[in-house]
Image 1 (cartoon, helix red, strand yellow):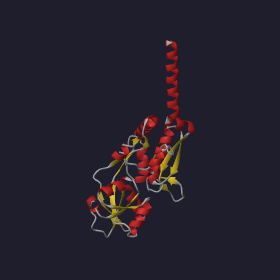
Image 2 (cartoon, rainbow, N blue to C red):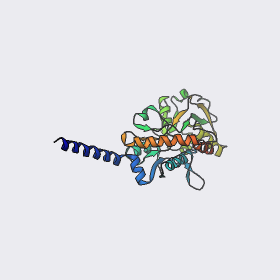
Image 3 (cartoon, rainbow, N blue to C red):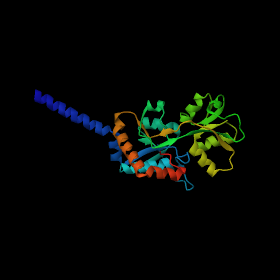
Image 4 (tube, rainbow, N blue to C red):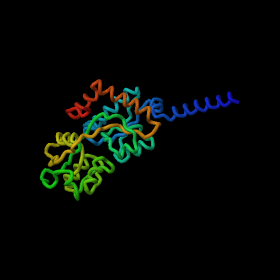
Length: 258
């Protein structure tokens, strides 16, 4: 009887181990030969299309470098911001590379890798505006932001009214047309936009006090733990090798990975 019980426990344990391995996301990525990465493709210089229509940007090259470390291909799926996290939850995407900041509300629902960059938030208005000079001045103002974005959450906390602006280009368009008073975005994206459009009537009026860490979100739980560990190792190796710094210099003209 004891031998039979031992055999049953051994078989059950082996079966459980096989089931875990079968459901493990890293195992699925390796078998598939692809790392499926969500990205917007509309946020210069993080993730956008070049003059030839090719998907490029800081996050695109970071994603490619990570996939290479895993010995798989990077397959990017372009989607709207509001679909990124739901797609991670339902398994449509393995990860996302989209300048995603680590904030408390996201830590409650997702696991994150170690940071691979930092970001600083700015308020952008038209040049002639003089009534918005700080984040507190957003109270009662109308701003364009992607639903659920870090920028939207900040603006809401300051008492602003939110109009949907699901791409950076749309936010600039609404501001230029006078449909909104301001919007929030990354300082790097603003300066890159102005480099391409020097005659546009926009300015930065305030900077966030701190830089926020940018990392890769994964579905929360044991299923993604091994993939997260491997990605953490890959990010640290890419940092030590100077690869992340080189990619940053290419797209930002500075090192946002430190």
